[in-house]
Image (cartoon, rainbow, N blue to C red):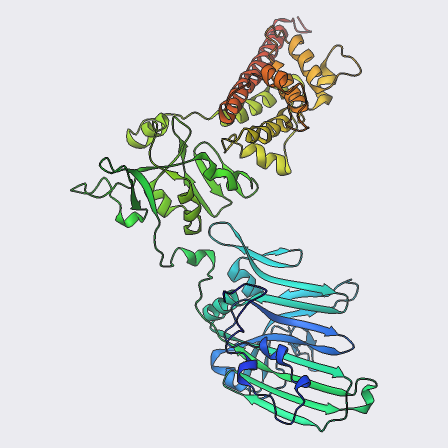
Length: 572
């Protein structure tokens, strides 16, 4: 039978359930088999660190502290928990101050790792975790736990918990925990104390003990008439050790050191067979300008990808930043790129191995295609001819045009014409490069970002304060048109903004497509155009619009300054 998570799964190996046999004189229903299955010597999934609960049929909890590796045997000498006073500040009669992060119990140095604290005034328990552990993983808090980012910038679960007013359960990813313990030279002592309560006939007391180099537990079952209608009680109490282990889960700063099998990418076609030619992206196996014989494939060999390779990055603009020349992920990684004459993404083979995290290689391989079209001329001149040259960057031009228009309007209106972008829309506008798919539907979201940034972002206050006349019902675009006209516009330079707004309302970008969709697309000048071509057409005309508006404002300022210089001074 196959393994099906959640339904058909093999029992975890090396658990107490496998190693501890039920006492022969104990009724079967009292043996805590399910609890014993959770105590594993080599866990790999979620691991309970801290727990507290109370129900009619069961109560108890778990805890966790850390000790030095050479003190684990002493830590397991008893089933009684060690480190019970950690997480509390104590001041003794002689003034001795104990901060609650470490304690000496006999010959053992016990260190705090995790607990739930119930401070007065807090509606829920507060989960507190060893800062060293969180720092090691560079973790960040979520609403119910902690996560960290791997080198690729992907979120990884680290800790999670469930809380109520009087109960809690805290879990950690076992592989990350063992990796940390290995790096820190520590072992974790995991503690368990459960009591089950049920009804049933009277039984004789049963005691049993499990002792091993990694665990020490005591089990009992008894009949206690003071427990009311649940007189049969059974309990398990003890501790076990989780040792450190170098695992596949390592912090970002160690990922580069891991041995890996470099991915291969298509760099051309075999002229004899028509089959793709592939080569590893391992930088150490690629040629450089210093090679004598030139037999190795060069580091700067362009590798090509369909534009869709950028979709997951474009979908998360607060994490990834896209431009016409680079893709970056926060402060974690970045890779240079460009777009060739037919819109393919081009990246150098060596950069794929050096700059792109290995977790991303599989995704990029999916969109890898043989070379076609002409390399971006600007990049070729910069990288191979050492010439100063720019590449086509319509969105970079548009962002700069918006900034220039705002700078000019500051002088004319006394305030920027466009409000400062913030939050998600700022991230979307700053990272926008246009549609990253050939699907016609992909045009709408890209144009919507332009609409929000350049139309919804207009600040009407300075316009109304400057205009000599306007109608009460004038909206932002009508006010902007009046402003341009007062400056002497004879080309209706703001028309593209009105067409863009019309396309949003009638063409199905922000609303359901209606009968005027075709007319709106025609007015916008994108009818029957591919998504990328349509976007770049609109963005290019927006650049022209803002540049013309800036020119009009600069001319107005210069005329005003010239007029002021020509006026006689008061003492003349």
